[in-house]
Image (cartoon, rainbow, N blue to C red; front, side):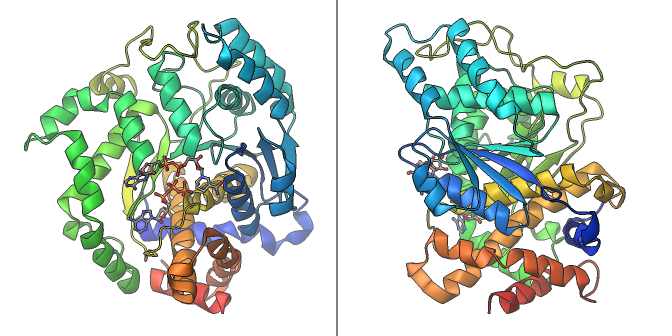
Length: 448
Ligand SMILES: NC(=O)C1=CN([C@@H]2O[C@H](COP(=O)(O)OP(=O)(O)OC[C@H]3O[C@@H](n4cnc5c(N)ncnc54)[C@H](O)[C@@H]3O)[C@@H](O)[C@H]2O)[C@@H](O)CC1
Ligand SMILES: Nc1ncnc2c1ncn2[C@@H]1O[C@H](COP(=O)(O)OP(=O)(O)OP(=O)(O)O)[C@@H](O)[C@H]1O
């Protein structure tokens, strides 16, 4: 297993490798991604995600939105924007019904949109940025899971997508662990807490046993958020010294957060990039699809709407059962130390979702990179941590320029130089593994 810094550096080295032989490239070689997001309220979020992916080298971005597509087309003319408003309108009728929607109507709606999503030639799906929480959004989430499973492509679930996923598990429509779909979750603090609640992590024996100090998981969460000022300085020290492995000096509470996220990863069977003052990347072995034709993700036959207390038919297995069942379940979970911008402009999470999707699409699209890494986990870890670091650096550099006037659109403009930075670092003679200070310096040079 590679160290943190080795994983990130190797990812940087290999990320731009295909560009060395451009004659072999064609449109889409470096990633084709569909972003499913955007509703009447949120136009910016899917545009941020799609632009972030295009800026990091993705060749082709689709946006499938539940609203009028024209504003997104204006914001993001480089993306192919597909309108799914009809689904929204049909589903809305069911939302007004007293009894909610029946399972057969739900699956009916899903099968109406399945052909549209399945027809897209993509290496990854990314759902949730500004998706809203309508019934149509839920149908899109379920349908994307089916498509991702059928096409055997990675799927990123962000923002409202995570909230809907939690709702569906709570209402008995989906079960954790999610099987046969390669999902990476990118929760913010609130979404992480929702995932923990719905996965019943708080009830697992392992958590109770671990929690000598009898703190509730909510307390651990609060402390996790409160450590930001301490870990912020540690993070800065790591970034400048280039030593990302000073885990011995890690705050105990950050260790708690890592162990919690590792358990969540096991319970959900999803990789996780948890966003906050310190991003935490938790990567599991990518899904091994069974050789036989896969079935849809398990969804029970119960109504999907207005049944908040509906329980899953089968109880979620305990952590011990899962570990016993999945003996070779390998997981790496580490905090990502990086300089952070103190300005919390909304939409930064959407940029991360775009970057993460690009990394996963590119790993999926270009098989040659797979030989360079000793194992799948290091490769994925390097990619996700790299995405987090690049967005953070872009935010810091832009903050230095605009101070509190910083907006997410400004960060995106800087993020356009992430690709150039990665290319320069990969071609430079800086030591391997690359110190983060070098990454920062190259990014700064590129932006200026
Ligand atoms: N311009 C746009 O179109 C934007 C759309 N967005 C989308 O809007 C949807 C909902 O996101 P929202 O940001 O409204 O909802 P969130 O779930 O992120 O936040 C809801 C509330 O949770 C609390 N919260 C969130 N993070 C917290 C933290 N770290 N510590 C303490 N409390 C915290 C805050 O009180 C916040 O108002 C998502 O799909 C997202 O992608 C956002 O990305 C913002 C920008
Ligand atoms: N307290 C913080 N201090 C410094 N940086 C932070 C803090 N919280 C989040 N960030 C940075 O912002 C990024 C996005 O996290 P955030 O919690 O804003 O996600 P989000 O809520 O999904 O964003 P969005 O506004 O797009 O919905 C993180 O990955 C991190 O780099």
